[in-house]
Image (cartoon, rainbow, N blue to C red; front, side, top):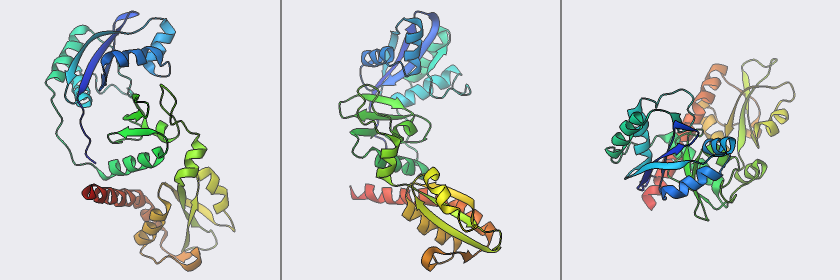
Length: 295
C-alpha cells in the first residue's frame, strides 16, 4: 500500500485585492487547470475570496517538483508558518514575497521524501475509505493518514481534488461534476457499521453484558438500554464482526450462548474497550498487508 509518488507542480497564486495575499498549492495537473478550479469553486476558501471580492486569482509562478505534497510541506516549513494554529488545510496566507521565495527555494531542493513505515491506523483509515467509495466512481489517490486532514481523490471523469477525507466518507462527491455524491443514510446502509456496547446493571454488580448492534449510535442506543441495563461504554465500529470477536478475546472470556450477561471485572472490561480500536487497526493492517503480498 505504498503511495505511488507522481510528479507535479507547486504553484503560487496572487490576488488583486491584496499584493501580500498568496495561495500556495500543488497539483499533478497543469497549474492553469487548478487556477480555473480555485476561481470557480466557491465552496473552497480560495473560491470564497473570489466570490466576496469579485476578483480572480492569477498565477504568480510555479515550479515542477518530483513529489508535490512533500514539496508543499517543505515550503511551509521553510517559511516558518507551518505551525500556525488552526490552519486546517487552508493554504492562503499574507506574507511578503521574500518569504515566498525562501519557501520556493526550499521546495526546489526538497526532492522525494523517504518512505516511512505505514502505521496500522493509516491502513485502517485507507481500507475504510475504499469500502465507502465502492460503486461511487471515485478513486482514492494515495492513503488516508487522517480522517480530518487532507487526502486526494479522482472521479471517473478525470477530475482530481484534495479535501477532508471524512467529508467524502460521509457522502460528498466530486466538487466539479458531483459524481459519487451519496446521502449519508445510503452509505450507512451499504457499509453496515455497528456499535459495540458495554452494559452494566445497578442491581447486578460484578456482571456485564456485551451487545453488538448494527447501525449508527443514534439508531442503536435506545434499543440497548432495556431491563435496567445501562450503557457504560460504547465503540462505533466499521467492522462489527471483527470488533465482537476481538472484545471477547481481550476480555479473556468465551462469548456466552445467547449473548447474556457474564461475570467480569468492570475495570478489565473498560480496558478492553480502550484497547479495542488499536487491536482492530492492527488486524485490518495485517489483512491489508497480506493482500499486498498476493499482488
